[in-house]
Image 1 (cartoon, rainbow, N blue to C red):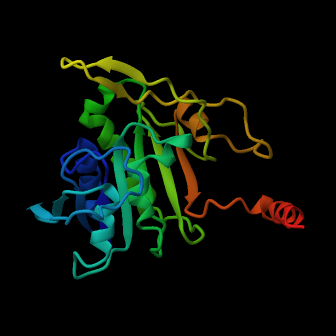
Image 2: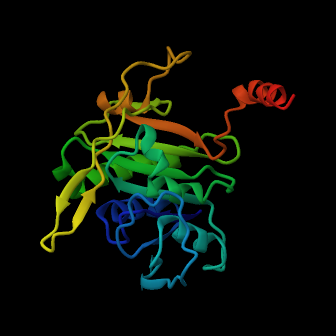
Length: 259
């Protein structure tokens, strides 16, 4: 199996290094990742300048672009062979709920949405930022990903991917199939004045998780719930964001307004 590994934390990030090493027994693993951190880039592609892939080691490439650029180039001519699977991560931090809108980890995985096997986005969900400096945390998460793939990936409909969050705990309790949770409004921006007297702003932190369960989801928990209770969260997410449930009512509204 030819496995493409990408991320948004950069080619030298501990998460991608641990993941690439753990997946080696499954086949040929090729790392193609941004030359530096590109968090929050979602599915952005670079269209205003050329991209320059640089090989820094056997089967390891750095690109001066976004996470999605890395997968797009890899699957559209950078190599003379095809990939069987795209795995993005391991991200330094959770990608839960509304995070999927902004995540470069998710964006890279979505570039592999047309493959026969569903692409995988993997994130390490820790409660302490210092945990992301521990190689052991990534090694444990990477081994879980190896076992998940080696066991045979479940089938998903076309244009779907797996969003997987792994709790940074000493012992993982198991895994849960989850739905995408929701966050409350983001924290306010932080305003400062630089030494030259110019106003500057920092984007605020993500909002807290919404704790109320969703309707018709009494037997399935959210991704937030799984992580909070020591379980791996496995959420199938899709590219098509159309709300098919309200299409007919909106069409009726449009018809009425045009009369």
